Amino acid sequence: MVKSLDDLDRELLSALRKDGRAPVATLARDLGVSRPTVTGRINRLVAEGIIVGFTVRVRDEIDPLAIRAISFIEVVGRSTDSVIRRLRGMPEIISLHSTNGGWDLVAEIGAPGLGEFDRILGAIRSTEGVVNSETSLLLSSVLR
Image (cartoon, rainbow, N blue to C red):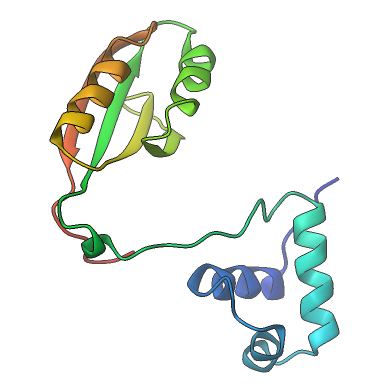
C-alpha cells in the first residue's frame, strides 16, 4: 500500500530530481533532517514504488546532430493499452504520457539522426491503433 506523500517526501523527491547522486549527508543538511531520516525515506519511497529508479541526464548539446521531438498521437477506439505496449518497446521513445484533449498520447522521441528519426516516425504511424499523429521537433531546451 502506497502511503501518501508529506512535505518532506516532496522536498526529498525534488532534491533527487535535481541531483540523483547527491550524498545523503548533503540531502539531510539541505532538508534539515538527520541522515537516517533521509535514508529511511529513500528506502520507503523505493519500496513503495514511488521512486522507480535512478538515472543520468545528459546535456542536450553534447550531440548536436541528435534529433529530439514531441509527437502527439491519436488512438482509435479502445486500443490505447495495446498501442502503449507497442510504443514502450521502441527504444527511441524517451517518455510516453496519456493525456486529455484532442490527442490520446504524447511521446518524447530521441534519434541520433534524421534517417533514424524518419524510421521511428514511420513505426509510430504504422502501429495498429494509431490513426493520427503530429510531431514537432524540439529546437532548444530553455527549462528542464
